[in-house]
Length: 187
Image (cartoon, rainbow, N blue to C red; front, side, top):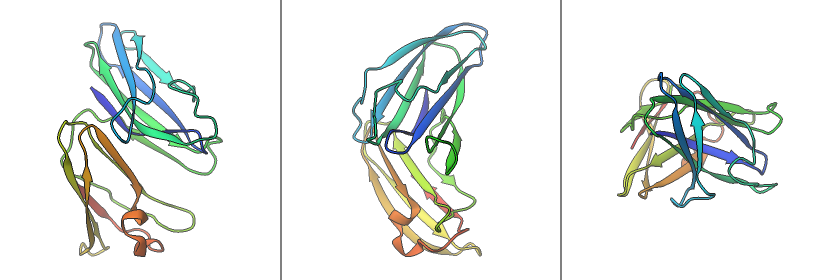
């Protein structure tokens, strides 16, 4: 099982997925686009993946046609057996203004540390918190200054099978002009 905690299409965003079969046996991959509220946004897709092969999903209408409306959520990738890895890239449709690339998540984590947060007129940092479990979880977002001192903290409830995606400045509006602050995210 792999997860992409961020998937956004339409409304000025594009996302591509890369999924690699690390095994010597072919298999199938089931892809589900799930909304923030935990419901399927489109029918699941099941696709064959060759041994040591790669799926590359670049079609922005692969799951659904969002048009000019922003549709976002997370992608759950289920393998029929082969071990998988992969990555997600999201950004603006022209790939000129902003972009981020992340590995697909296979091991669920209880904490993560970001080495830098940028928040100004040019740069921004977003955090997508995914809870694929059945029960509600509480994530704590901590922001530390350059000296390692805790300067802000906020809890975020994330329901079962749900996701929350926000900019750091949506958690801490008063930090909107600061940059280069290393936070710690602890679900």
